[in-house]
Image (cartoon, rainbow, N blue to C red):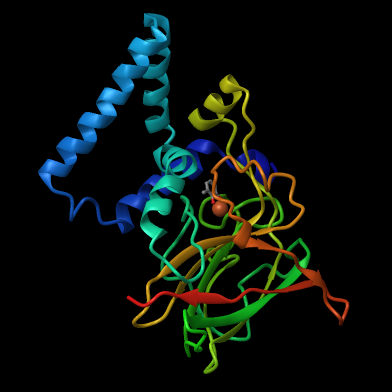
Length: 281
Ligand code: MBD
Ligand code: FE
């Protein structure tokens, strides 16, 4: 069996659900008043939709069945990160003066191996895809270098699969925390990821098919960039010319986040420079 046929929505969904439970602190700073305000408004929005659209029992039951299936497939992290997280990110980052952020998505894994720059991400000996040299500087908003900044990167392989979520990949494949040098300079050797298609065999795929949407995200690099005394930046970078750069299913592309790699002078793959500016805490 090929890797594609083994990768199921339910398997990657339940892994994402497990990870979320392990790693995310939930609601620690949210008061009862705030829960009341938000839950009331959400419930009202649903009721307004039912009344405004004159929702039938058939439609209500279809919704109920679908919501149950989202949970069974473990696809709540996927659903929320694709259709809601972009607004949360907008609210969280609108105060920033430095580099733009983007959503984290469901496939982050903390504690990736640390690698000193210049680094090569863990990958298979015969890793498919165009080699990519991704490099640049990490500075503060005044352009001063942040020595030893951490550039944490994770991305899909040439088939669009993430290690630890699709079967058959080495544990840390295409994941690493690269430590910038004394001038804040980082250099990362990796491969260009492929566009990512949301699993079509789960509840999210069912919704996409029923609504006549498409399931694609443009190819992207995920990043978390950090330095002491500065705000952690969670972002993504995309590639110019990607078929889905203008209609990302997750609404997470921004013009400032589009890379345009050029062929390397030495003939091996492509290279691109991207500089990160971090806001002070
Ligand atoms: C991804 O790779 C991703 O980044 C998001 C946000 C949602 C689904 C898959
Ligand atoms: Fe992703």
